[in-house]
Image 1 (tube, rainbow, N blue to C red):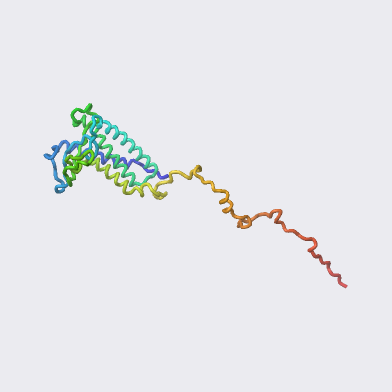
Image 2 (image 1 turned 90 degrees about the vertical axis):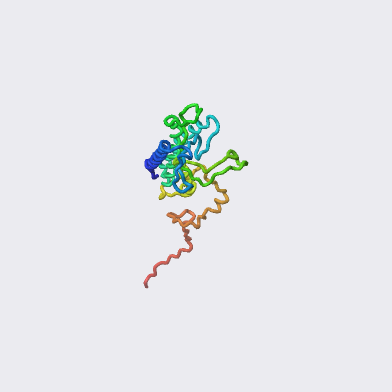
Length: 258
């Protein structure tokens, strides 16, 4: 088995986490929230727009009292699980593309976990009425791709009848989105038909419990007759020994010279 060192993949995750946190802190300290501090990057469709997200990715929220706490705890378990799975894949010799994608997903998960866990305490941005600032920090979003806005039809569940614009997200959300898209797009290369050259060994050998028992009729028909066997025989059987007939043996006496 070709084992791979997961350090370089964790290093990529660490770089992305540092980039995500650096941008969030810069936006928090140097930008005004909302439209007042909005900065246009490319035309009117790509902007920096500082908002606080008390819920999930891309501006979505959990509406009940302890939804944020449950979401933060779930993110913690997801972060640990993704990190363990990344190490497992590296030791199995998984393709590098899959490992890079998993490291991006891990970076996104950790980036948002930091916001939820600590920002309520150190940045004092927990929503009003939160039972505790720990695990109730709001995630800082700033990337605004402004391509559509308007009212959602009333027949749509959850968000029907509300004014809505394209989501505002952050670098951590982007890492998760890109990592998941890479896995979906290249899943055949990542999970299917790997050889030794690809760095993956078969998961397991043939299982004796899955052996099939052929009917006796197929065994008889498939059995090669003995007299057609091409294998050389070292000795003759008793039935194959040559028989000599004493009557057929002619002995001639030597002629006497007269």
